Image 1: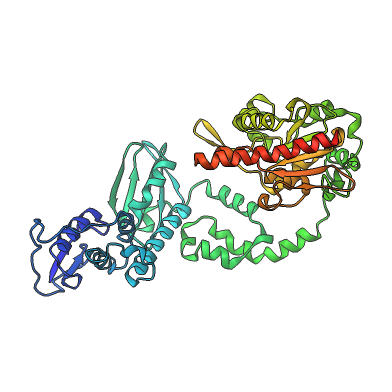
Image 2: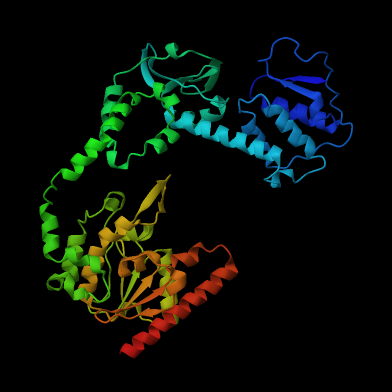
Length: 493
């Protein structure tokens, strides 16, 4: 029997080096006992020394995927985790693709431990609550947490990145993490009593939590599954959760019984123009003429109104409203998804990379862009800042619905004979229902009381294709779609 003493519970480097040496010498898993310093006394009888570092047989080749798996599993609190990892490593000698066998008992057990460790890391990130302590050096923020597994060091990077400008400590029964604005150090474990019991901000936090609690969406089992009660004693908001749950039913009843508030004045003006009739869709049996008296103010007037649009929250992250452009009596209207970064800065639709693809494709198809009206289903650029860049985000159903008002106004004034929907968002707005491009692409949808609608992809789809051959093939298909549009335009003339 060979006993291996590691430097600590999560000494991965020590485990890796020793395990590879043992496996290379052919030492069977049953002949190895792994210890992390928690065991006391000689519980295993006489033990043998480790074999020398020279390789007796052939060094074991470890699949690349085993390393992150082992780094996670070694953080599990189960005593058998080290024996399990060595068992898997030893089997690589004759089963190099062992990790690909999902049904293997050893692989299943390791994956289960990996998942449990990941879940525990997530809980630590979510449920650590810092409390401020005044010190001569300035504020020091201290939290106490009790993880199930040995995940403190594994979870520490999140706190370093997120709370880099403040001095903090996370205390756990096993060890403590300390950040001094420059470096992270590890200290001995602590007790709950070593952390402050409360600070001045916790009443404010409980008030905020109580106000954002939505009783109509309460699902107790789901909530306790995501936020188990064992964590509640470290959460300041836990003191109000019981009362919120107990009063949820009464609050829901009160919400239902409450009379609706009066709409703002601008909403009444929009309703007077026919905004309440949007439910029938922009196109279809309900003709676009039903929208209201918009034709009286023309596109210039609508554009001026849209500049101050607050129908949804997208305006807050955009530079400006990007309205459509083109002739007021265009026979064909092209509708895209939303403005991109270039369009948001320029205030004009289809002037960025996707716009260049669009211009080249319609020219090749024989369509004069100057005779068409070009716009988007959503008029503000939805994006997510990442460093110095703004990354495009797809509009959701509520945002599409909010902006259908402006698209309907444009179509009411223009009265086109044909509308080309570029992509799923545009077609969802036009048809008032989610659609699958693959099912309706290249088809004309004719309506008795409104313009025809033609479905194709958005030109940005072509930009996202990684394979050059596929990109060329799909671009030609897009041009072919537009040639069908060109034929319909000539037939309408």
